[in-house]
Amino acid sequence: MYLAFRSLIRTFVPMQNAILPLQRLKMLLQMEHDAEREEYRLQSQRMSLARKVRRGICWWPVRVGRSYHNSLNQLVVELTQENPQDIDHQFEYGRPVVFFEAQTDVPTGGFLPHTATVSYVDGERMVVVLPSTQALVDIQNAVGLGVQLYFDETSYRTMFGALDEVINAKGNRLAQLRDLFAGQMKPERFSFRPLAFPWLNVSQQEAVNQVLWAKDVAIVHGPPGTGKTTTLVEAIYETLHRETQVLVCAQSNMAVDWISERLVDHGVPVLRIGNPTRVNDKMLSFTYERRFEAHPDYPELWSIRKTIRQLRENRKKGESLHQKLARLREMAAELEMRIHESLFAEARVVACTLVGAANKILVGKTFPTLFIDEAAQALEPACWIAIRRAHRVILAGDHQQLPPTVKCYEALRQGLGVTLMERIAGNLPSVVSLLRVQYRMHEQIMQFSSQEFYDGIVEAHPSVRHRSILDLDRPILWVDSPSPEAFVGETHGRINKEEAVLTLQTLETYIEKIGRERYLEENLDVGIISPYRMQAQYIRSLVKQSDTLRPLRRTITVQTVDGFQGQERDIVIISLVRSNEHGQIGFLSDLRRMNVAMTRARMKLIIIGHQETLTHHPFYRRLKEYIDGL
Image 1 (cartoon, rainbow, N blue to C red):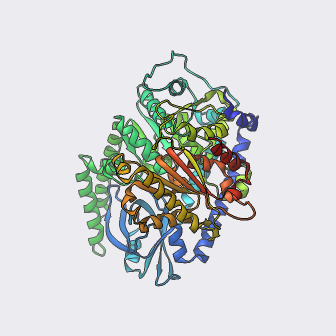
Image 2 (image 1 turned 90 degrees about the horizontal axis):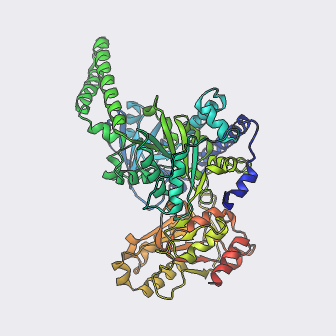
Image 3 (image 1 turned 180 degrees about the horizontal axis):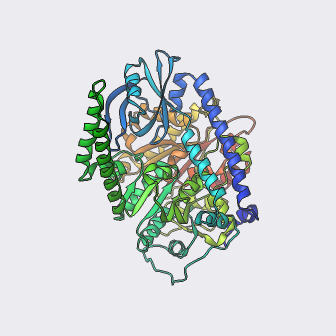
């Protein structure tokens, strides 16, 4: 047992009753549900359209494009932003949306009585699934049409249903896993000799073997840059030598896309349930919908569906087509089932989000093993949605990086943010494998994170230990920024415009030191990170205006911390924004986000922030002292 989880062991003492904490969890989830629903109500009533657009929860105005029935026989319509803006929006596959009419910044016609669902988003174009033909008619006739994210009641209903099923489980595998995760039972293991994987390091090999030995549960704990995804892909690949098919899930569509791509590159047939976040041919080619459409029997099915629609549309008053339609529907259902079973028979990995595991496409499907990637970012109720379909569970992630999103402070304070991965690690420390060698960062960039979050256990691989861009360059630099911050409302929090300018000046100066030609020849890249969305958007606008940086825009990514999870860049600059007389740093005190931001850098990390404000906090004081001591 290693030190990184000692605090968890103290926190999670095995409980006598495995059901009580789940009942409490259900109560906390209800608090979160109520808080989020109230937030949505207030947004809808009080927030201007311009502010909703800036926040990324609304597109307005939008243009209605072509409509059609997709391969799953859903009526869909294409929407395009009329005035596209470079704003981080929150639309993605599976999220519910509503439509409204507006002539000015204040909605005039109110919301249309239809809830739709996002199918996928690509740049300024969105495809949504409509509930009826009447919904299509209404949005086509709307004046000043807009589309806004709707409160996601379905996801909450699915999580509540999963918790109820787990709480009420008796005498089945779900009940066993529930009791096991609570520490009431000892996890069982196979006893074969460890397998060798020479292309992996020692800790990665140990982790893969732990997964293969586990009969019930295993955890792969992967600090930044330690090859968690590589290890997980190898574990999945080896598991498929013993099992015909596994389920792979993650909290977000982006995380599912990433692990799916890596598996496809490994030669594993993947069936992706739901549309990917990054819409390109490679990603779309392994989605259920695209595979369904490409099946040899699909043209016949499409023809039957078309005939059914035409008969309905052209039916004369009093004409009875019941028997004919019933026969055609029976033929269509038989073909759909044949295609469906064929697609699942070909797939070795079924991949979806945790909530997506409740998709009707998966009704009746169970899997020997469930792999949950980025498990430390997922609410426990969401994990149980997928666990219901599995015999054993493998979790991978890092509880010292981004936590789950919890909007209700009281629910967070009472423990809703504690993940299933943390709970199992605390109750069953023997199932945890820590990856100890990182392949991303210069040793001096890594060392502070290792000391603060991983008890100094993580070490740099020799290939990256002293890697730098410039000779005699300091890998970490802190640039003082005493410029005053400004508050721009709850939506975006804070902005510091002078610090944003300083951020770009610092980058321009560093690129000049490197040399523009060398920068381009070596394909160097830059990540500019700010914890605050408005600061990131403002910096992005400054990059567009910069004569020096505009030609290099393809090499520069500006994002929030959440947007950089799982990514890395040669050069990373962090704009911390906060600068005030009282030493208040707000949610910068969530140190896990800072851990993510700092560990995105391969060779150069530059932190820009007001030293006096930030060093009121002991973590930032230690960070400043560490940098000064290098």
